Length: 338
Image (cartoon, rainbow, N blue to C red):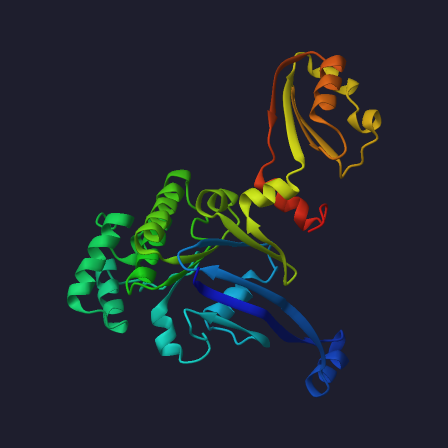
């Protein structure tokens, strides 16, 4: 399958001036600065086939934003290369930006005091979209993102959910081949989040738009992406499908139950019974409700359940499969080897 995005051994280093305390340190930093090299991105490689929605995730400070800025041409890599639809982002920027759309969750590209319709008219001229194509495009975006209810309103009057839909429409006005979405559902309520996700799915399905999605909302990843690239401390720690991640690293189960007598909780001691460490098991209690998360490499489902039922009286219980959020937390803590 044709690759729309290709990144090879991307590195980005920043120089940081180390200042010693006091006035003497300030003077020394001014005339003889001591510098430290910070590796924000350290040799990341991946590719994205045309028409794929890729989840690009990692904790704060992992280097996600730096990678996105290199892919969009805002930053120049220290070394390595990236190619999007046959173009190098840092070269011939004017033509390249016609190929991409970018949405940053907390920053808007819209004009604050203009009515939304006027904002789109300005963007039409910037991107030199022909009149007939502009009408077709706006009709499609109105259908997918339901803009009609607020398209005559000034941007400053829009709710967060409306503004996010408006920003996505602005990023898609010129029919880009690649869409970069940075936290598109941050701060939104459940209903608006699902509306945004539905719009992204429809745009991807009907137009074949390649999407790179960065998010801290694991529901976004599970509902939109079949594949994720996970980075931490500037390095890639996982590249594969969500099902592969669950299969390879999903050795965590959750056993939730309700005690008939809350005082019975003191009778449970899983760590001593099965010689488990804090990394192997965690137990949380909320009144009569108990949640046990444990590694199936160390103790079986059968053992956990049978011990619990032999030690205490249980009203109700439920065994849950591993959630992707828990897998990712464990990867961040290096509790599994990648």
